Structures are given as C-alpha cells and as structure tokens.
Image 1: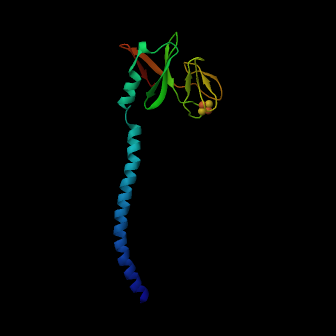
Image 2: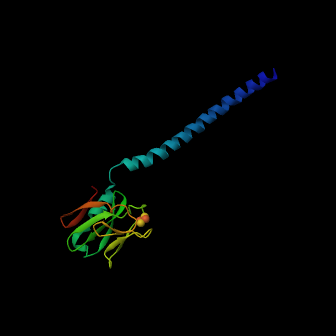
Image 3: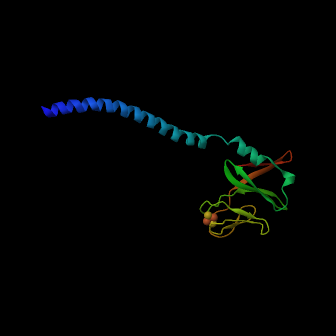
Length: 151
Ligand code: FES
C-alpha cells in the first residue's frame, strides 16, 4: 500500500519532471542541431566569395621574380610564385602531416618547418618525408590579374 502511494507520487512528480525534461531535451536538441548543421552547411557551401576574390586579386605585374604571395583557395592557404618560366600556384599544406609550408626566396624552395620537407616552386618534392608534391592549382592571367583555380 505504501508502495502504491509512493508510486503514485513518483508518477505525479515524474510527470512534472518529464515535462521539464522534455523542454530541456528540446532546447538541448535544438542547440545541438544548430551546432551540427551550421558547420556542415559552411563546409558544403560554395567557395566563399572573399577567398575567391583574394586569389584573383593579385595584379600580375606586382609579383616580382621569385616572389611568392600568400593566397587562400577555398579557405585553405596557398602560394602564387613567379619563376622566370611560369607563374605557379599550389597549396601551402604539407602532404606529410598537414603543416603549412613557408617560402624561402633566397633558396627558391618551399620548406616545411615541421619535419623538413622541401618542395620546388612547382610543388615537386625535393627532399624530406613528404609522400607527395604540394597540390597544384590552375593559374590564369585575366585582365592583368592572376586568377587561381582549385582543380
Ligand atoms: S608536416 Fe611537413 S614534413 Fe611533416
């Protein structure tokens, strides 16, 4: 008998708690949904116009011989570098473990500060642990400005 009363009271309290729990769960689910959907939508969205413009905004005559200019391609760091023969663009993300490479103008190489990989201006591996070249991007000069395309 006492257990019936306790059970009834617990059910009554449980009913109140369940409503609160439902509200709390609903609020948490809404927050969780927003937290999950917003980054996914940003990841799946087209190239941000700012990054695209940044890559395309480099006046071709402002890039000196053996100068490398930092760019963003789809939000990822890269470089545009002028050599005597060609203008190259490649990712700055090292294919070894993902560090950002740096340009050494006097040695005319990209080097990775993490484990010492070295790359030619066109992204070829010159030494170190990198298993692959830097990802190359397409380059075109349009109306005097360098345009970089992710292939
Ligand atoms: S991350 Fe670049 S050499 Fe290891």
